[in-house]
Length: 217
Image (cartoon, rainbow, N blue to C red; front, side):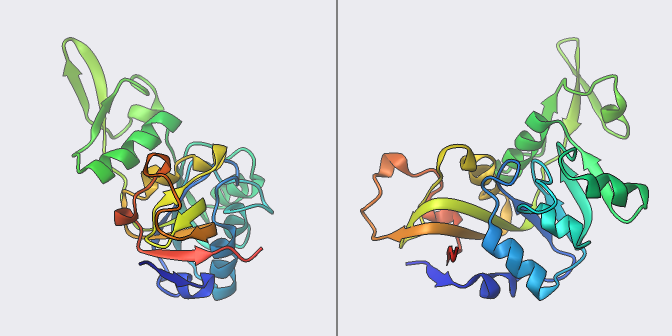
């Protein structure tokens, strides 16, 4: 059985300067309880890996507004104007990654791959500083895996063993990120007995999950 801990206990395991992956899309699927706990604990110097930066008052966007983030690896920042403001101030460093490439770099980390080859970005600014490999006469960029110290997830349901089910679009990026971090903590809306979830419905197996946090909303 997985330990069920509070959000504050969860973020107490995260040190300043940690690299944290957050699942979700535009705030949907962000672990809001643990985001709030990070704010309360005043964790700082975070490297944030996520599909986007949500909105100023929603999800992981609040970490940016509070200036707790020093580096962001993401696909999209347009919904949170604080990101561009802090980038122009040189307070935060941004690495913009095409969305499919971001997902594949995370997957590569979880699968133990040395990287992926993609034609996306060849001949553009995305290519700068990267190795170009030609396969069958076609150029590809070598994109390296993305690892994290911690992945903070948001699931709809878990059983007591830690098997996770995500609901609709909240599934975005969460299962991938469960594979690519040293420590995985899942914030869940409901915890049910083992056997209550059909094995065919499990999106992330318990093997990948270290702790559960019961949502308090």
